[in-house]
Image (cartoon, rainbow, N blue to C red; front, side):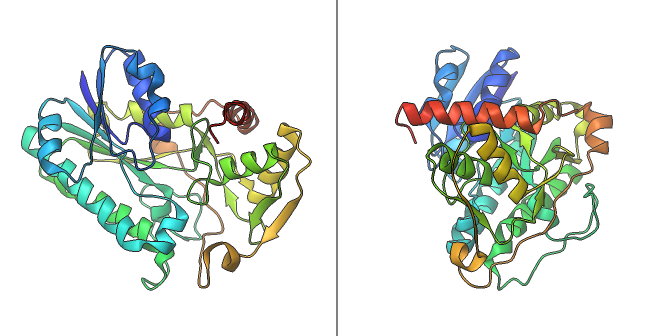
Length: 325
């Protein structure tokens, strides 16, 4: 098939592009390169079935031609990162909603299948665990910008479901803490690359709050397999949790990364206020119920946390040696 991947030069997107090419598809990557990296697509650019377009999903005229020539659109382009939600909520809200609306509108006009990448953040701090796809959303006050990313992604999902009711073939994947090679290591990126980089440099590993927060981390290859599986028509009109059911506290994660990397880094606790400013809120636990994904997508995450962390550490170590981090 002819497939368009928005945000295809990013962390998950670049892995998805590679997987689609290996499956024999023709792939066009659209990315504004705000967070994407061309070297993530090195293998893809050597494939004559891949094309790279530098542009944004907010450019509707550019997007129109790309969607018209596609059989499927994987829409991963997004403005994300915890610090973005705190520091620039307008960028998060407008960047996510406007682009998704363009993708869905053009896909509907051309009857093109859409797979939309959402997030486990939409569940907020609902205390009823594990989260299934119909769980309630429990968020803090709109005056707390921490919740704007979850809100924007939820509006995107509302748009997806509305277009599904009009007949658009669309599926939603809710990612639970994907990690692995190519994940951004910064205050805007995930906790695992931040911990790994500090460990490899023997710098303090900063654990926010008291480290009791519980998460389920999903290696990127498992994330991609679940995403690709939603191309099936049986996935249309549905949301799917894509994640691991193995849970770990953030403090335990820090110790595990220090051990696997052979680091002498001290592990220190940093208050949320120091990391993100006053009034920051977080969810204590995030665990998925993947029954629907397992039954309909035959999704079964295969990479253990220890194996995935070791692969990630090896990749980050190589990047440091090559001066890329």
